[in-house]
Image (cartoon, rainbow, N blue to C red; front, side, top):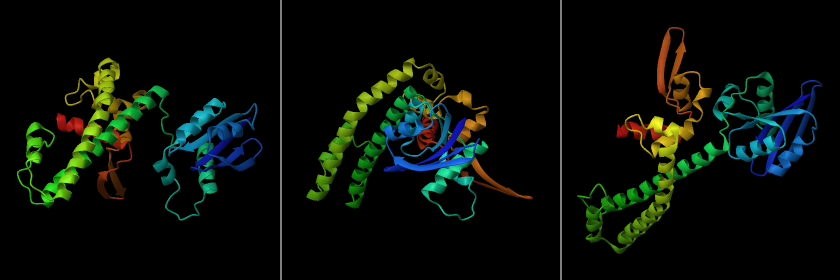
Length: 288
């Protein structure tokens, strides 16, 4: 026998809609959003094969890991495609309807499944995304310095404020105390971020030098030791993609097109993929 279920995840609870296709019996319940509660729910169906659809939102990791530990089979649903298959008709949206919709798609074989990366890929993906977050924060603090200088009419600002010439320029400024304080705080924040970035980037460079996939990516002009791990971890196992256009689509770099009868209108980039992957590809293209 088989149990097919849909999980609607929230921080405090998980709403479940399950079905036994052989008997038509429906099981609806709510459990705590904890791994122990997920394992306990699966144990209610001993000796049965349990398939569960989980939307790829925050919390999917612990839910899928708990399902695997309990002997169930998780199916990760891609959020945008799952929502699009509802259609534009207005319907009531509740936790129960969301769980039932996931279960229905899984039963009908129409669930748009996302790839569940193995543990080692998730671990390095977390590190590459952490680096991207730190780089964005560092850029934001540097932009605050530039904005402060422009606000006070300072011209001739060096492009690289953290260089020796840039430090001398900032040290010779005559600005109000509040502006100088803001610049000093921003410089300290940048230094703190740099201290966190240095060991992280060192580990990523070591990975890029020894990992075959990273070495293959770095053969392309513009892809370096820091962008290669990001591209590799975000794109994942490419053997699951049957054509190169699917890799483009998974990155969100495909162009949306609307066609009806003899009318056709090309849109913009769909951006329905990993933003970190698009950022790494853009940076690589700029370097090339």
